[in-house]
Length: 321
Image (cartoon, rainbow, N blue to C red; front, top):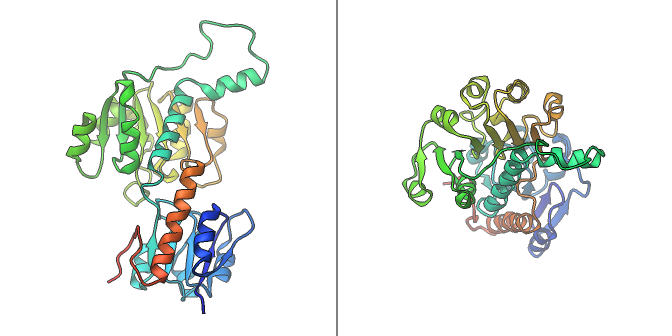
């Protein structure tokens, strides 16, 4: 009898085709997030599950879906899964690192340019019929070339973000859990503590996973340290920033602008942020290119195929002894 796999939301068809070569596959055909009860009902007789960041995989889910041997997360992050609990039970957890690094870094740069050059405001200005003529003082923004770039988190995405700065003659500061001499040599980056980075950087871009240590690592205290001309970019995880503190900092001019692709309570975005012109908001589309989403789908499917065929996954999050 074929093993059974469940896909919690529609993803590129390459994953479905790969999985159907090996298993009986069922897909959530509605383009919406499943409730926990719906998720449990749909996976209780499955051997493998291809999950989204929006699916909470905790002890209750594992208790009620005892046959699942692998949860393949369609993301590089995995803060939606209780890794310790899965490991105790011998359940493999996988993710999709590497394939989305450049694409997410590109989105961070898109946000950076949108904020510094006030692109969204300019687009709205024209659409609302406000543009009458060229004006020397219309929608003045900031230059990027020659500025100091602060990178919090020098993992795959942080390094890809740094690489894309080389054409702009920027000084690079970085803060990371550990020093990376190769990164420093390759990009002429300087390792500093978080306070120094915030104080000296013109642009701060965050590329860290969500952990107990990184939750609310940017709050009122940090905004007071930053320059009032500085710009904050976040394409990592929403809870890394205290959004109410950010809204206050943007409103009072403690910082100049921000670009956010992630939020504390997705898909909810606090009204204070939505009312501000000096923040650009995108709906968690960091990896949203056709090529990257297909590569993520393929990797997630291949991880499930490996585990359910008794092999090691390509990109394991946890080790089972």
